Length: 214
Image (cartoon, rainbow, N blue to C red; front, top):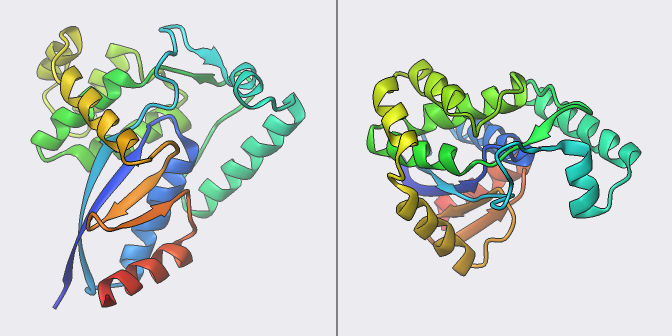
């Protein structure tokens, strides 16, 4: 009999390690077969809540935030691209890529959860940003991605033109910050266990099996 497992996946759609972590988790769950009945909910986290509408060049941003040289930044991107590729996900990050504000994307994800399409929208947003190099702060992009996964585009546009779900998203962000989550991905399991970072499938699988057996 499968063990029910509540998984809160705290992440941002512009976080490369978050899609790597998600792919690793999904692969691990596939490897466990029928052992686990996972219920995954995506929780909001903003890497750059103060980012303006125009966004910022990724190299400039990483240099300002972490002090990385252009060479270090390029090498890190190459490593991340390879890690993603190993998990079947294509990243097109380059010197001209940009970092954007993701608050509106999180508002749509909150709505998508109510509509039963949150996981599909989350994956599509990762693809739009990392693979297609689209701007996840652009309402037109967000509406198109929502429609792609079967959500009502007119309703998506209405939500984006309002401040609907803004309060809920901010409350959720504050909740996870209050729980000590200051980097993502952070994967909380059954409200008891925490797995941090874009772990490989093997690490996730071991942790999941141990939790299921506990």
